[in-house]
Amino acid sequence: MIKKTTLFLMLICVTLSMIECRQTTSVNNKDAVNISSPEKLYGELFYEVQKNHLIFEDSKTFVDAIPKFEVSAINAKFKELVNPTDEELTTFIQQNFVLPQENPSYKADSSSINQHITKLWEVLKKPADEVKSGTLIPLPYSYIIPGGRFREVYYWDSYFTILGLQEDGKIQQIENIVNNFSYLIDEYGFIPNGNRTYYLSRSQPPFYALMISVLAEEKGDEVYKKYLPQLVKEYNFWMKGEDKLSASNSENLRVVRMANGEILNRYWDNENTPRPESYIEDIETAEKAIKLYPNKTKEEVYRDIRAAAESGWDFSSRWFYNDGNKEAGLSNIHTTNIIPVDLNCLLYNLEQTISKAYQITGNADKATYFTSLAEKRKNAIQKYFWNDKLGFYFDYNFQEKEHTNIWSLAAVYPLFFNISSSPQAVNLKNNLEEKFLVPGGLLASTNFTNQQWDAPNGWAPLHFLAIKGLQNYKQFAFANEVKKRWLGLNKKVYQREYKILEKYHVININKEGGGGEYPNQDGFGWTNGVYKKLSSEKIKQP
Image (cartoon, rainbow, N blue to C red; front, side):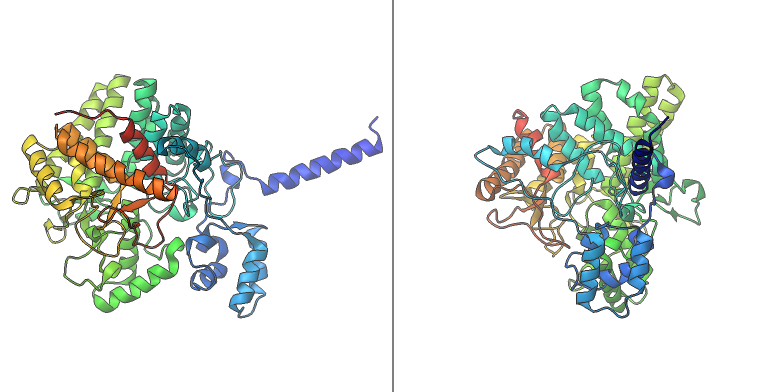
């Protein structure tokens, strides 16, 4: 017979367990997870906070906040406030939310930069998510975040982070990252920009196949077989809507039918509203845009801004009308009219990777089918992006049927994926040397704007792709020079400030990179990975 005190304690334990279950949501219990954007979660509270820069200077702060109580209870309490002042609203947020903090910088000691990077992996690592709270999409395995204001995993960043993890022998962490992205593909049909609900309308440059290739280097070709279903699902995401294309209907979602029937891809976003994480900024941009360009609607501007965010190049003159209006800035955006060279090279690689995976499984017919798709895309890349007169690859404006003529490092993707001919590689190398090479490495683009993916900034992922692409075509001397300048800049800044940054001022190596929507961030995942990978590589000789 159970004593009354024992029964009472058992009831308490059961009650506490039930309370804990209500507060904690397992990643595997999908039905219990409320996957909603911050606008839907918080309603009028979201709009009231995000339109007021006096509350938070960074619009990403509130959408990353963690609610202390049930969201419905918070929203009900907010409705009781009548025309709250800024002070009252700030107090309400503090009482009802745990505000996110930027990831603390890991202060270096006397470590070398490579030793520092090795220590940073643990600093930037997040454990598997046990709780769904606010806008975070929980992931079942540990992952590496970029750092600074970026408190979640990011899709294309992770490939370059993986390169450094590989050099440090952290193969299990690489597998964890790949498994997280595979989980996202299975759950949502694609890999979102990052594991936040406000990123569920878009992806990022499709580097998943390249991540699998790195894992296969360590664990063998069976890796391709294991992740084949997810590779195909990601491909289907990018090609969705292809069956609806025709001569009279040339565009749908992320696919575009060219005049001669070729199918190429563009960046897109499934929503045409202001980004929750940049809400007031997008509204201001759209209002300016429709004044300068009366034929555009706010919804078109929002879509183009979001599509540029999917590109990872947010933002760059790559996505702007080349109409000479330097005052227009971001309001001059038209991303969805542009077929990007980088995206189509990545999808060429995805088609090749799927073909290889099918070959390993013994499905020769499917392997041949995807090989033929890759070959068609390769021919289309050469046809639509290469400018023979200028000796360079440019993005293509399919509405105006011409190149955008924006000189950017997206042109190195065909070198990285061995799409270019040898003469093309020589011409491209000459242009890089003449137009892009500066004391700290290579410019992201040759245009000087206030956008972070333009001059005077340089970025780790673009340097890695450029150096590897040049090496593919035996342009070793120039590749070595680019690598020496880039690694030298990274090391110089580290020795001066003990920081590894998101982006760098490559023209004046004593200045910090800037531009864009937020300050330069310390951390930093992909810079760490690329530095570790390139600095561990033996110098390639001609």
